[in-house]
Image 1: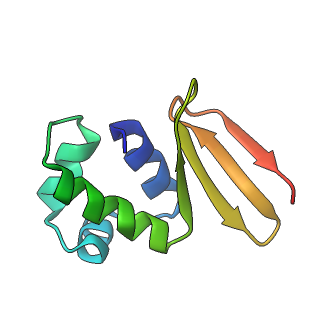
Image 2 (image 1 turned 180 degrees about the vertical axis):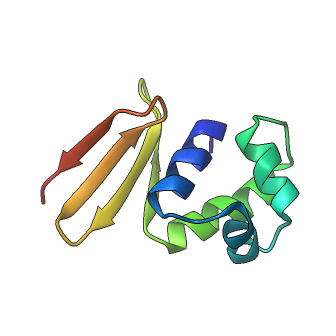
Length: 89
């Protein structure tokens, strides 16, 4: 999970730093460090990524890393750079 992916996913889910930290079982400082791009151990990143995945977030990689989130209307895909692409089923 990249720093920008964490920020974008948290924004789309409308979660505060504290809410995400609680869901992931980490401190708010850890979330801030992830979003700042600070290096963290893989177990910590996995906890945060798992918390997002529980909320329906799928992380995408490749030439345009981003996130996909399933909604009732389809799938929203957001690149880590911020462009939004609504996809229908």
